[in-house]
Each structure stands twice: as C-alpha cells, then as structure tokens.
Image (cartoon, rainbow, N blue to C red; front, top):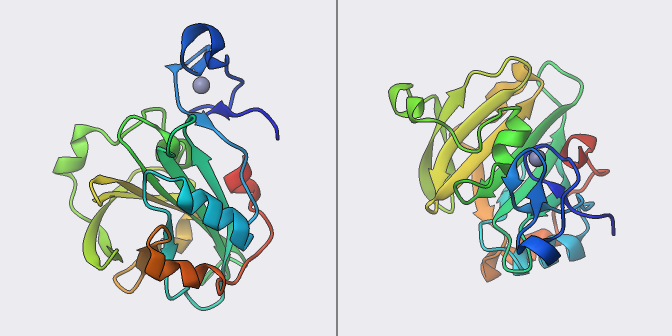
Length: 208
Ligand SMILES: [Zn+2]
C-alpha cells in the first residue's frame, strides 16, 4: 500500500515516529489521507466499519449513477474524514462526477476536493443564502454554495459534522436537490445496500 499523503495538498508526510503526528512540510500536523479504493463491497464495508464519521451513499442511487470509489483520512483510530465518489451521466455533460465528504472540523478533506485553501468554510457562510438542500440520514439538510469556478461546491452540516458535495463539471450542479437522499453506510440497516450499489471504475478525481 502506498504511503498516506497530506489530506490538504496530497504531498508526502513525515511519519509520526519522531513527532507523534503525521506532518506536512507546508501544512504542519495533518490527518493522513490513504489511497483511494475502488468501490468493491469489501472496501466499502471496511471503510464503514472503521469510520468515526458517516460514510454517505445516495440511496436510492440516482438513475444512471454508480459508486466510483471511497477514501479515508485518519491515523490509527477511527477515520476523521471519508470521501465517496459517484460517476454518472450528466444532464449536459457526457459524464458528471460527484464527491461526498463527511469530516470533522479542521480536517480539510472536503476543502481539498473543493479546491479551497482553508480547511473549513469560513464565517462568511452565515451571510450567504442557503442554496439547496438534500436529505441526510432522514433529515432535511441545508447546503450553501461556495464560489468556485470550475466545479460546484456545496457545504452543510449533517450529524454534527461537515458534509461537502463537490460536482464536476460546474454545470451539473443540479444533481444536488431535494430528492437526493443520503444514508450512512455505517448503519447496519444500510449495510445491505452496499451489495446492491452499481459500481464504476475508480475515479481519478477521488484518487488525485
Ligand atoms: Zn500539505
């Protein structure tokens, strides 16, 4: 297995042996980000069983969409950030992609897929109008749109943690709407869905 990389910049890390934490030369102490895994049921189940944050999956899966990988951030304990990628036919683009991230504040996994330099959305979020909502674990969840030019970026709070939704290309933002229902793959009642999810080849965006 390749070494984990910086969750924020994907650069190499110093191992915790000397310093007690994974450290990036640029970002200091960070959560290690592990290689993206293809969406095999075993990988999804492993990530779900070792995660401290939700492993969000759309259920039912939007028509024509497939899971295209999973990736976790965190040291030896439960994962502190998990990203799941989905690939499908866009309304205008031939192929669209979506990355769902659940993470603790300060990890920076969602922001890295959003192309932002900070780890968390800033206080300006409170001044922005809510843009859309989806349903996460049965709860209506408000999402705010962040200004990023080449992809659509939404962020909100679900289960007390950040929920990021990043969509490529930017014109496919409409894939995020009221009827998108996310379930947490960690819940035993949702585990059975893992075996039924349509899957696609590992997403280079998730892996990058
Ligand atoms: Zn870094």
